[in-house]
Every structure is written in structure tokens, then in C-alpha cells.
Length: 171
Image (cartoon, rainbow, N blue to C red; front, top):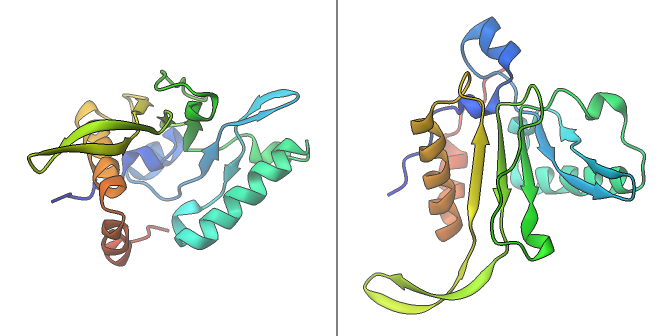
């Protein structure tokens, strides 16, 4: 039932958009809380990684950031970021864009709640997603579709396998 969001404008920087009018590279930033404050290092060319490789890259990235070893080039040039306020027990927030990035996705705490699904009410794991984006790069409809697509993937992770098999990487 989920229609993949078009090669998301949320995956490109303003410079990429100005140069080509379409996304080329996705540099995925992750907000990391450290003893020295928050940083948002990024995984370059995240669009080229499969899910297991992306998980390894994100683990390495956060470990490096928490150890204070992030290189300056990893702290600039991201195109989209993720922040997880849920780890602090917060249900939702309004993530603020890192300058130059197209979007930032906020994840709230996962809570077990009564939820209607297919005409039945049952306890389900529920998370609130928040998206802030630069309207020069992403319009409201695309932002809403991105959240709807992500929600569908979270409901049915097998859709990620289908989407991954159809995904085209733009170099």
C-alpha cells in the first residue's frame, strides 16, 4: 500500500539541487550526544550502502563521535539527519535543521499503547516521527509522503526489501 517517495529531494544538499536539479548523494547525519555537546557527523554516500553496511557505518560513526575522534569533514556536508529524542524518554520534539541540510527526522520514544489496527484494538508499539525540512529543497507534500512511507515501512519492514530491490542509486 505504500508508494515510495520519489528519489527524495530530502537526500540532497542545496548545492546538489542547484547544480543538477536532482539528488546525487545522500550523506546521512546522526545527532550524537557527547560529553562535549551534540554533534551531527554523517555517513557519506549512505545511499550506496545496504542495510547491514549502513548499520555498521552508523555504529562506527557514533562510537567515533562519542570518543571525540570525529574528523571535521564528517561534521559538515550532511544532507539529511536523524535525531532520537526517544532515548531520553521524550515522545516527540521539533528537530532543528543543521545549516545546509535538507531535512532532519526526529524519533520519539517507542511506547506500548492501545491502538486500532484492522478494526481491532490491541497493544502495539507506537513511535512519533517528526520531520523538519528546508522548503527550498523539500515541499510539504513530499515531506508528508516521506513520513507516510516511513510509517508504512515501520509497520511492515518487509516493504524495505521490496523498496530496496527497486531503488535506483543516482551517482
